Image (tube, rainbow, N blue to C red; front, side, top):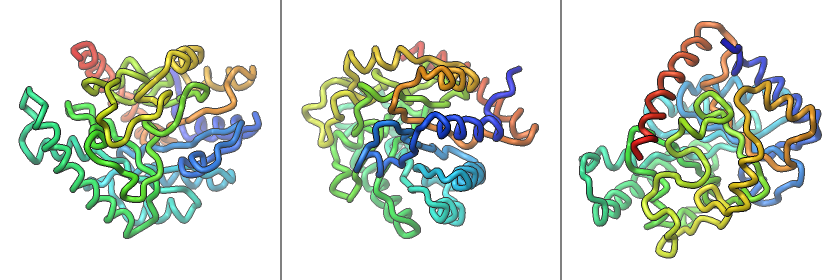
Length: 300
């Protein structure tokens, strides 16, 4: 058993990136003025918001700031935690999953046909999205958003932007739609590994499970060519050059100077634990989830 994804390893990764000359930027900062040698630092707070506060404090102590995406659902929406992360200098964004929620509320999850059903769910989801955005903005400023995968739902929440435009609500960026990855590496701990595409339903490059993925002419928000939702051949080849399993593999590539100048690193704070029992719980739980998601992907 490899003792990876500990708080100690997290600190080491940050230190080594800094030592290698990388600057850290939040989503908004990267959108406004991207640097050449940079870590676009993203955190998806899927659960255990308390863990997010731990990683936010570690980063603050190191003079590092990034973006933390919080969900709106009970158990994940902790006002005090969100405010504390913001006070530590980090950007807060909305980790939306409103298509999945709307589909459950409208009882269409089991329906096989999409068509008008898709648009109906999108209308309901956009109402939910606006309400949750207002709730978050009553606590902290929100300028960027990022999809939560909701792997058990057949509805991808990014379908919201086929029928609606988040820019009308003052949102400037969504990492899956608004940034080119032709020359920026996407490095994520999805699946509690750094090569988790085979066990991820939606958090990966290209083929994200949306029907007619390449037919964006009718979308209100058209994914940028080269983005994670609209990958180019160049981008696909670029991502394929860098594959890692463990954090030690990433660190070895850093030491050898093999990583590109621009990287979006996505951390899920729930995965990074300093104590043995939480670490073991996450280790066994995530491995079980990976096995289930692997077979789900095979059926898509």
